[in-house]
Image (cartoon, rainbow, N blue to C red; front, side):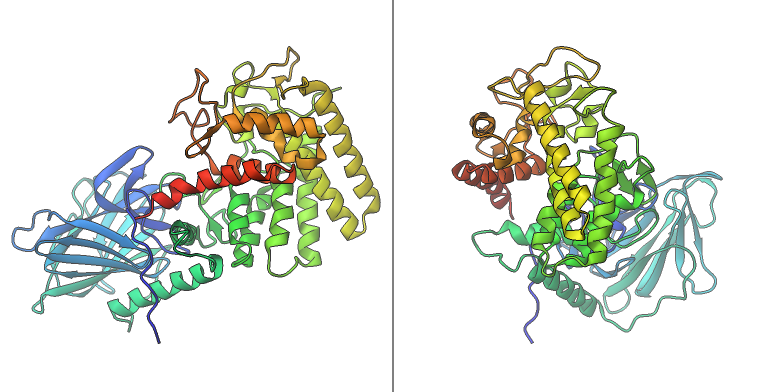
Length: 541
């Protein structure tokens, strides 16, 4: 049998080293804009917390060894002049670490232990393992030395300020091996018959099988596809805490949540090859839908935030997802989706429409997903054209679903509401040349240089030709060498690192590209797609 390929190499500064299902990764990134010199075990249970510091050590001096770090999906390696240390996942909560010529220091990041915070360290008399108990994650991190020597153990049972950790060095054969487990509570002493190489090969096979199902179309002309698949694979977590389904975090760096619109795009990517994960990915925010019908803004292991919502692109996403699935959704799935989308749509038509108003509003740019877009500079509580446009699309999808499920009256009512919203949109926010926004409390409509004002292109050919032709012309002026700038490059508010005031984002790109195609602007859609994909391909190792 031919061995599975190792997969693409990547930098742990950009992508943490992790595996499918795990809630922790190995990374130098400890928080937003915070990087360490050494790699850390960083857990995403109860938030993002760097728990253990992993430091390769010179065998002769015991000091920190200078090493180069290389990561592939199945193995992380520190390589120095005196030897190397390799790390691989045996399971989502267990890593094996093997060293030759170099030692390894494993220490608690938190130096202060109080009755309510920090990391307690002790040696377990049952299995002589060394255990770190973290208040921040609520988990234990058990270190079992499989071969070699614990040259130093310090800080065991210490309270207050202390250094806590162990140093593992080679035995008589010049090698050592240890295992690190993230435990919810107690577990039997560690036992495994697998060798380190067998663990690595199993991890390699797991990733290879995922790639073959999710991006079987990859080729030399799309070298980033395999790396993109790795990001999805390694950012997936198993059900735990408030995440009741397998889910894909936006990152196992600091953006370690499921946001209630980004998840739609991940589900589309997974649909053809991993339909079960795609369905769970799409459905997760609906598990936390509140009584008003609102979806949470984000879901994490121990936190569900309802202070902001996200735009209702879920009808758009559901229509695409069901066409991408290898098998049609079951009647039960269609009914479940219809119920969730109905409540989500009615939230915007009731809670987010002022008395006597025809169009819904956002309460802040965060609700739109375009947090600081210049559309919201005149007024944060705003009626915007993008919101009504995606809601119209969602109503159309609901109408199709209702008809399929035999709810003919609902189907007719949803279509009538969509038509009425489109008429109001064109009457109130279309000036004959462009879409505007206005304060929800009343006031004069205004235009901005934000790409958000051009999002009504998602209506495609549902809108009259001029209503999609003029936005398409303006979209063309937002094109840079790397894709669609979220703020017009000539705008005084444009910034290449301006969040939603210049940088290029995938959600906006995908929605606009799809709308352009349905409106008949195929050439521009091709150009948007090509320019967005080019830098991703060029950035591969």
